[in-house]
Length: 83
Image 1 (cartoon, rainbow, N blue to C red):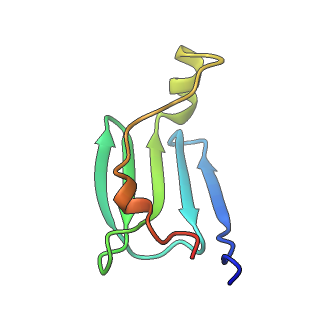
Image 2 (spheres, rainbow, N blue to C red):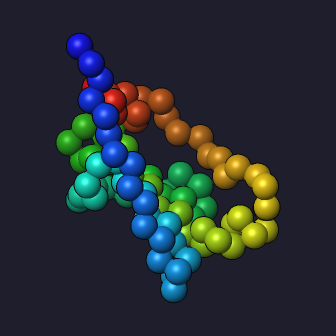
């Protein structure tokens, strides 16, 4: 059985310096801050990640150029994302 592709969408709000990311169409979700200014959005029915929000997105990269932004995610939250 072939895995279903999930479209990754991003929208940047330059006025607020916030990056919004979603897996598939944005939808209602429960938000949980994983790191200061990094919010993971989860489906309230199954706790799977449906999106992320990064506050002060440009500021984070300008303070740490050529580096990755990283923060821990519980692997169980990703289960079934590409089923």
